[in-house]
Image 1 (cartoon, rainbow, N blue to C red):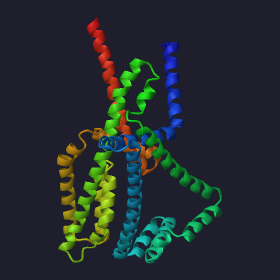
Image 2 (cartoon, rainbow, N blue to C red; image 1 turned 60 degrees about the horizontal axis):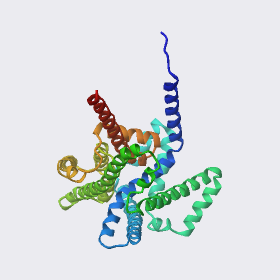
Image 3 (cartoon, helix red, strand yellow; image 1 turned 90 degrees about the horizontal axis):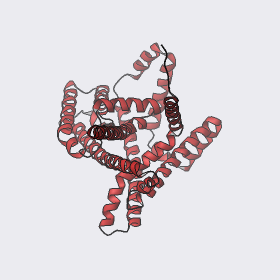
Image 4 (cartoon, rainbow, N blue to C red; image 1 turned 180 degrees about the vertical axis):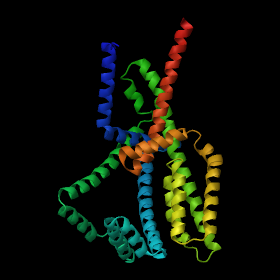
Length: 374
């Protein structure tokens, strides 16, 4: 059977593969721009609102971004401090025989057993020292870290370069989003004037939908994360008023933090939070009644969130089908190898969904016009 491929078809496919190759090689730049666009979509309505109230736009932008950075820094310090304290409480209250665990792991893999033993010993020594956390911020500790990096040679410099590279990327995202927010009109309107009019008219509604969807998604997700985190904290803490020997309460903040973060991963996140909480409860020797209470409480929390909170908070946000969101999370984690990739997979999938639906709508309108013309 002879297959004839026209030159035009070949060139179209060749251009498509070349475009995909180019996009893959500049994926870091695209990700930086996308993060900046998310930040722009979130903060621009706030800046516009302050300007409408009489603030100068430059003052409003400075205030919003300084507040944003300060809140992030304070939250990071508070989270690290509380996580350290509760991790220490968890290891202190762990009522399992560590020697038995290590022996069982060593029977499967001697190398893994020795590494686990070394890890547990060092964790207990570090967490038992009250000055350990404060020493992390000392100049001596920083000097020791830099010295250790220089000892391991090229690998250490790669680690140090990766840290400063990530810090540089954060500043790039911040400053790029500031330049996006600066004009009162959307920044992409001036860029789209450089392309033909018909493409400009087709792209503006798509970009506006993406902008509105991403901004609403970020705000809605923050509300959901805070609600789930606070509710989880109260759920874990409540039995301590009725059970004297209730050790899981000492991990309330840590579990609430996990629940809030995993809320950004739809469908999978709440299940992981439940499994982690049950694991903590079992390791701390919680009675069966506590396990039942956690299971029922988490189920009711998810039902209340799905029935009442999500439809209200996320009504203007990107609506991604559950199956698509699960596949997006898996693909994002597989491509990046990090939880950040899994978290960003949802807005990426939502953006691609908006673009796909708008393109299909445009094609259908062309088909309808042609049919009516005929």
